[in-house]
Image (cartoon, rainbow, N blue to C red; front, side, top):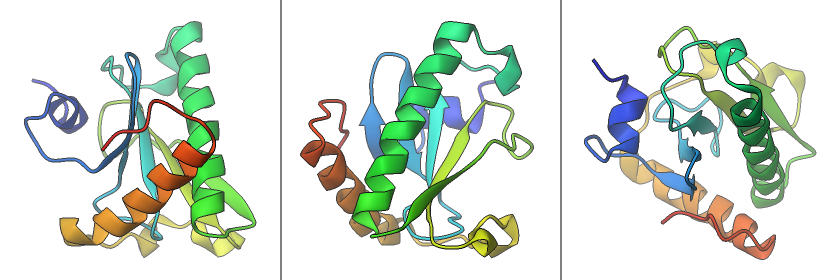
Length: 139
């Protein structure tokens, strides 16, 4: 059975995408720890990030860095945070989010939001990606 992320990538379930290329996508979390919380996900369904082939891990890392720079710009944050947890969905994903302090790195802050609340943060991230010259911007 495909993971929920594979179903989002396939368009079977809705997702608020900010990045799409042949190997990796990025979409906003439906339970963000902070506005702008984005998931970077390889299209290939591999559960554990350390099992990713080296080239795909490099691509996921590269896209995560682009998203990190975009959320930093879009939300005027001093840094971007990254967490690879992998317990909630059996499909590798990197959590990238604007970070102003260490307390943001806390999944207990995650709260489900109405999908309409993801539109404005997604557009801010897309604008930052476009300003950085990225052609992989989704949406």
